[in-house]
Length: 114
Length: 116
Image (cartoon, rainbow over all chains, first blue to last red; front, side):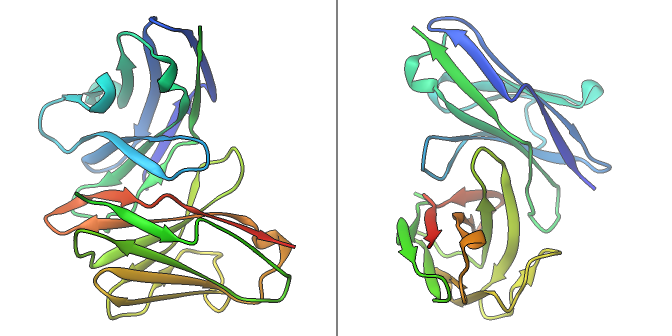
């Protein structure tokens, strides 16, 4: 079975500072990994995904994530935070050639301080 | 591309009534759609997997007679909450898979249901 742990339910950074949202996964088979962002009262928007190609994945809005198999991690980063980045971020895992079911982490709320 | 819509975006109903929520893939065909439920400040919980032309597959603990799912076409899946009660109040979100991009789910904007 797959699982995802997001370390830190709430992260607060200053505008212009580095954003680091942590995600560790557990999977007995090669995983697909995703980061989604959710703004208040909205659905989820795909930020980026890892599907066994390049381990460093670049997404929208300047975000990127690195798949590290040895650490079972897929942390999300952005060099310089903008006020518009304030939202809830979800890490999710599914398995290769599986039933496409996504297992989500608990989410991390990102707050940007002016 | 890969836009998913939901209707309505918000609905308020009386206890005991039924509510239908529509999920549409606007610019692609989706053989598989998913329905999730999200409580305030919590993550998404998968309720069921909806496949076009066949019965939905429900997750453990989800009452299939209460949450009726119909996937009659390649662009439309519906979730009907039957005999709704206040505890059914939640944010319901659907997602769809784009053919040729089987690993990625594209999400709708969600429907907030309030049962009085």
